Image (tube, rainbow, N blue to C red; front, top):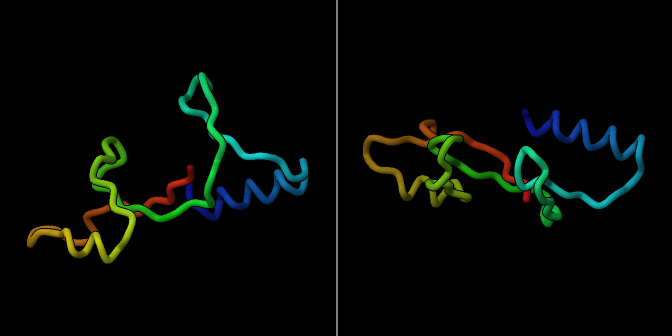
Amino acid sequence: MKLSKYIEGLQKQLKEEGDSECYYRADDEGNSYQEVDGVGYPAYVRSLDYCVDCVYDIDELEDELDDEESVEDFIKICVIN
């Protein structure tokens, strides 16, 4: 989902349901919920399957690239927590 679509959904919910606290599910089954404590921030990852190489700053990412990598090798995502 693109960030614009996510925001669109939030704006619709705000209009229809009013202001409310925001939580996210810890897993697909809803075994626990955590409060959203930020508005989101960009991150760059090599793979969505394994985000261990997550970098949050484009300048830091450019500094860490080796000769065979470029910024285009990474996926830009919005992290919401």
